[in-house]
Image (tube, rainbow, N blue to C red; front, side):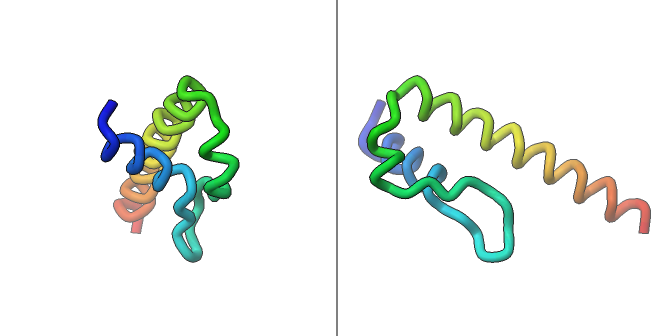
Length: 63
């Protein structure tokens, strides 16, 4: 794992878009996560974002 990959992972766990959904893990808590848990969360975040995007696309087609 590169430093950039590690940093990007922490950013994704901690970032919370204004008015949006997503995890907002405090940086200190994210740093304490075991690598396996962090990786699982990142994978799950990606899955959730894909599901959300599909739902938005489907809703837009109904209009």
